[in-house]
Length: 294
Image 1 (cartoon, rainbow, N blue to C red):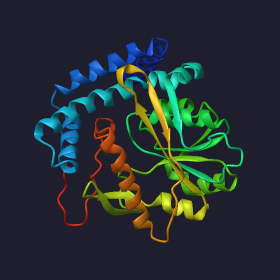
Image 2 (image 1 turned 30 degrees about the vertical axis):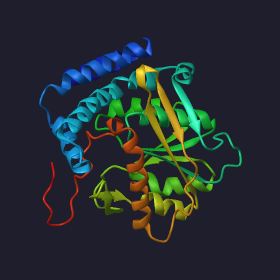
Image 3 (image 1 turned 90 degrees about the vertical axis):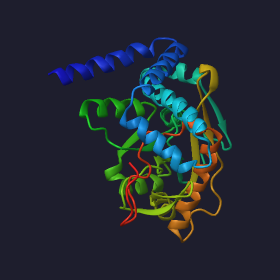
Image 4 (image 1 turned 120 degrees about the horizontal axis):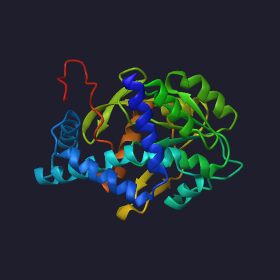
């Protein structure tokens, strides 16, 4: 009973925040992140471990600076689910600027995989890109552990006519959507274990990386268009950056394709390292016989 009550209060709080000015909500999230960073925690240790692995050339003071900023961004991203899940379309239109190298409303768009990356603005970017396209899209998601919150997340993320697909059911459904010329959004830069994955470098460290994008693009066949959700400075909102389709992708070498994906991601991370989700265990799965990092 107490757990259900806690969840109900948390959702109610997010709905309340959604009607407040975005700048106020964002500042509250940043302040909460700064406070929580001062408290020793497992997540803070994970952030420091990831930054040490990926940026060994940085002075310790620089890693500390980026870690502190990232914690503010990470906690903000959870608080700002309020606006992203429950804010009106008009509010999101005011908050999200679009920088696209393609015509998102192109009625003749070929079968397309919209490839998102786990920056702190991914939620805003993923929800809004479907709104920009203006027609039904598929969207893969990782189910949340709590059924009630999971259902609310599905409804919020799919409210602009997105067909939400659990990652566990994804391959068959995604191929059907691509044959129907329905764009499909997915992310592939988390560590989901060795199934359908290969070890390829990410900032010089072997990272267990999904090869699913390459296989789906080949089977589709589909073009792959990367996109990123960026948090703008001074609490101005977000930028949805949509890139051109990758040329010469996929190839016959899915490991090389995964390497190319990680190289692209590295390039984007270097532009705003404080905004990548370092709170996740990116290097959790290790090659056989290699000690874990966390």
